[in-house]
Length: 219
Ligand code: ADP
Ligand code: ADP
Image 1 (cartoon, rainbow, N blue to C red):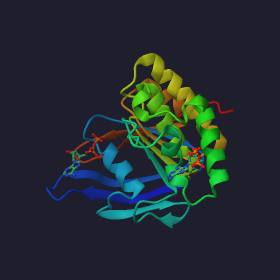
Image 2 (image 1 turned 120 degrees about the vertical axis):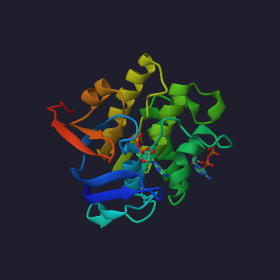
Image 3 (image 1 turned 30 degrees about the vertical axis):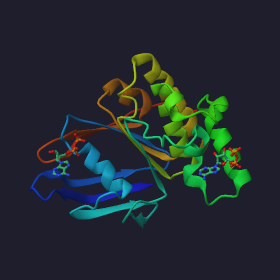
């Protein structure tokens, strides 16, 4: 479970990126965040990921305060950000170095199979299409079994057909361990298709304009 209590963020130049955000996302819930440019969506994700700190307020995952980059929280960006000098399998296994090699290999293989790339483990990132690379990024983010997965415009760079394919892969992967998902998107249709709740944000200062509860069927 992800909890934000009275979170505000002001940058050094005085910009109030977030003002008094309180929000609770259940374990296994999918929350989509929509809103225009500059309303604080990326700032919110950075704070939850522990990449930056709030000016005021608290953020907790399963009751524990988030202070710095945290293994309970995974991140996927608009670009896949794969490491070009590692094979696809090693990119996916990158966060699993603490596991025994056999278990690591099994988890990597299962994650690649889940995104339809079972035969791509020994390929290089530069050999992948944009959609394939983003599938690898999803596999890499979920293979560590984070409690919370943050997705920042994960499919915006893809064409419409590939986007729908990736949405399906995301739901398949999510169903394995059912982490809490927070999905930032400018695609309202995507928010309505994927999420249990849609939160709309507004800018100057960044705040919650409203939250819509959906009755989204889950397997
Ligand atoms: P969004 O992701 O919704 O477009 P951001 O979180 O990127 O919004 O930005 C929210 C506001 O904070 C904007 O006004 C933006 O210009 C400002 N901002 C973002 N990052 C910084 C920064 N590092 N320093 C100063 N202002 C920033
Ligand atoms: P191989 O070299 O045949 O892929 P390894 O036993 O070296 O077999 O690795 C097994 C699996 O563990 C690989 O598929 C890879 O995903 C992962 N792995 C191995 N070494 C690393 C590493 N240094 N960083 C990340 N993942 C690794």
